[in-house]
Image 1 (tube, helix red, strand yellow):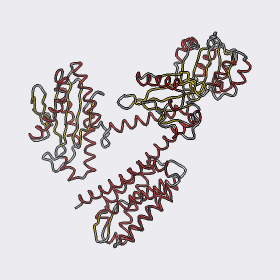
Image 2 (cartoon, one colour):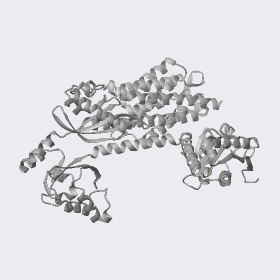
Image 3 (cartoon, one colour):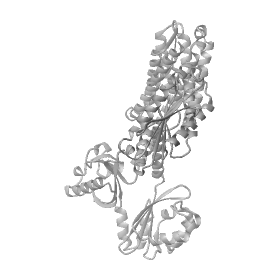
Image 4 (spheres, helix red, strand yellow):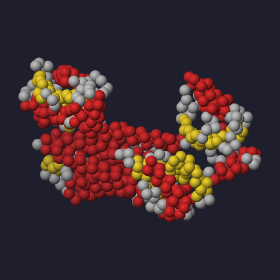
Length: 633
């Protein structure tokens, strides 16, 4: 009976989590299409989740039902505020009243209390961004509310709800609150990152765009639509240069972009003349996960004014100095000997620690020495200061692009161009916002990759990551003609363990087994993975059968020391059966999967021979040896 109640609550939990996940996927669309009504839609969606949970409610007495409506109620208040909470509570209360029954009044009171908790949580964190600790506290508050209601409210206490379903109801409502809260929290963070990137993209002073494989515009920023005199970005989507420019120029740009996508080599700072503007375009290929080029991204900087300034510089140095004062970027000019001829205040402000050395008449080596003395830049080694100063001074008159980080964490883009008369022009831009967004995006991608390769319960490598590692190590062992061993481990009578002690105890058992496996391997190259359910694998590069047996016996010893009680096992404690397979050379080159098949066959035979055994098979020699978990032959 108790197992059945857990299963019904688990199904209810799955529904609530699914409903919140659906909202998380639709919320971005709602925010774009139904501006100003996001909280109302969130309240309606949470109300639907609560009603759905009530439809899946567990009935344990006439007219009295228990369910997981309280997680959506509390979360709507915390993340949506009073408006969303009132809508959710109204829908939930209306539906509960329509159902009727002996527990109707109690159910309505608890519903209103749960929504009130969400509103209180929203009020307490109104000036902060929600974090996991807030969600955990809300889940704990919901748990306390449910325990109190089942013990104190008349209808629920009369049917002894606390003793009958108190644990599963409280636990699953708390889990639903935490899971739903994490989903909403992740959605908020992704939306914030998306808005930051969109803002940086749309407000960039450069012309930014992305094109598909056929050189058609996929997205553009505000500067692009102003350049081509469109009203909105959507008007440019799907167009190509052939729709915007004279055909000869369009063909030139098209072939240049197709060459970038064909070769995969970026085009950096290519001069273009479009709509009467001198532009400097950089275009890089975009690739999918498999490395295929699917389009290109372009950054085009309008250098019309800069070109005019360069022309005027040769005519009048004073006029150039006046013009540079109004530029958004830092600008400096050095003569062929490395003497600073001109610079604007923006150039000095871009390097606050060495600004006092950046004066007219200063030599580049003196400026760089001041940089080294103040340790202004983070990208250089100050152990060989004079060598760096000499090398950097020698490359002053080379065309180059640099991105450097200052001591205060800001980023600068330094573009150096050599003029025909031997002078060097330097443009310095503040790219701190762009680099921060780039770093945040990269960290997010790395976190997602780690989540995709890690088993959520045990924290070790999952099946997907193991399969990739196995193919890689098998190929390497075949190439180097070194042995490769595989241990396949299965916990004996684990289903009986779960049925006897419950799934939380089963989860703790799985974590302990994974810890024992980790203690058994000694090298960073050894891989411990959860293969599925109660089955684990250990991949041992450059290890023969004897070495694998030592690892297996060490694991069995660690597991025996844990002495996890298992009343349904013939051994009285948790044990494991282990299959071992080793191979090298031709077998790994021609049939690498036979290593897995042999380990699985050895595991199956170890269980057939009475469990708690270590049995080895190899693709070449068949059955090699059998040992019990204590190491006896």
